[in-house]
Structures are given as structure tokens and as C-alpha cells.
Length: 263
Image (cartoon, one colour):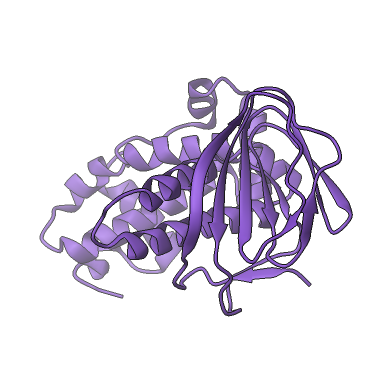
């Protein structure tokens, strides 16, 4: 059993806000008709759900489901700061099934970002406020789903992997060696290589090359008149010959046959 959320559904917030407990405070003893997403910004808190205790620290997110008994036996730390989203229950559907309500989110800053954006959207006067909240909540669920699906190793290095992929994606004209990329983020090449093998089942170099070739394939479909020599330079290949050799090995045909082809 668990709580299910439709990633593509309409989501409605009953309330959303920031709270600072200047003095140590017990969690309210209550059963709510809405789901309570509680994100710790600073401090600690122990919260019970139907008799099960959860110890929360900085960047932990706890889902307190509607209809369950929530309470505290020990007060939070002085100066505790947290955010919350109170979400109306919805019809069950395909999406994220939450079986373990506690998420450790330090490895994925996007989760914290989306909670903050949801709170801002809730308090805004945007003409499409409800639609914006639904879209943001869907993105929030996607990040939670990815966090929950990864093993401990992947979660630990998720932020670094995102930074590596961002650098790679925004500089397609470069082909990085594992050493160069590792130096950019102050890790050893072996650590970086192990991260990619654990997460994607490929070496860093293989992942980078496959991503580049897919970008080339899409680019050629949209720019059939572009010279292959320019494409090679723009995507980090030494010349047209090396691009053609790698492209044919992956797709079984030369880049020339890809020009103008749409999926």
C-alpha cells in the first residue's frame, strides 16, 4: 500500500507556506483531509504517522498522507525552519506510488526548488494559477520519482552527475576526456567513471559519444543543408571523416543519409 499521485493530473493546493519555530515545538496531533508535504530547511524534527516515527533533518521531505494520524512526542529543535504543501487528495492513477514517505533530498536541489516555486505560485495572482501549480507539481513528482528509484550510490552522486551532464550538454563543441571532466569537478577519474557505469551502464566516454551522436542525428534532420565539416566541428569531432566513422558504427549508415530525416 501507499499513496499514489498522477504526474500528469490536475493538482490543487489547500495551502502552502514557510514556518519558523523559534521555540521548540511539537508537531500538531491531528488527522488531516489533505496530504501534507513537509520539507525541512533547517533543524531537526521527529514526527509520527500512525505510530511510526520519522527523524527529519535538513533537506528531508516527509509525506504525511491524508486520513492518517500525525503527531509528535518530542519537540523540534529551536529555530526549526520548514516549508509545507497541503494538497487535496485526487483520484488514483498511474504515476508516483509513495510507499516510503521519507525522502532525503540533499542530492537533488530541484526538489527544494519546486517546493519553493509551488509556494510562490500558491500566493500569486497569476491568471493561470491552478494550471501553473499542476505543472510544477508534476515536475516535483518527477524529481521525487527519480530520487526514489535510484539506489544509494546514485542518490549520493546525483547532483554531481547533473553538473557533469549540464557542462557536457552546453558545450557540445568539446569532447572531454574523463580526466578533464573529473578535474573540472575536483573528483578522481575513477570515481567519475564508476558513477557513469553505475548510473547508465556505460563509461563516461561512451555515454558522451552516444549523446553527441544523437545530437548530431537530430541536428542533421533539422539542418539538411549544413556542411558535414561544420557539423563535425560544432559537435566536437576532429573532422568529417571521424564523425562519419562514429556515426556509421552507431546507426549503420553515413551522416549524409540522415539529412532531413524526421522521426
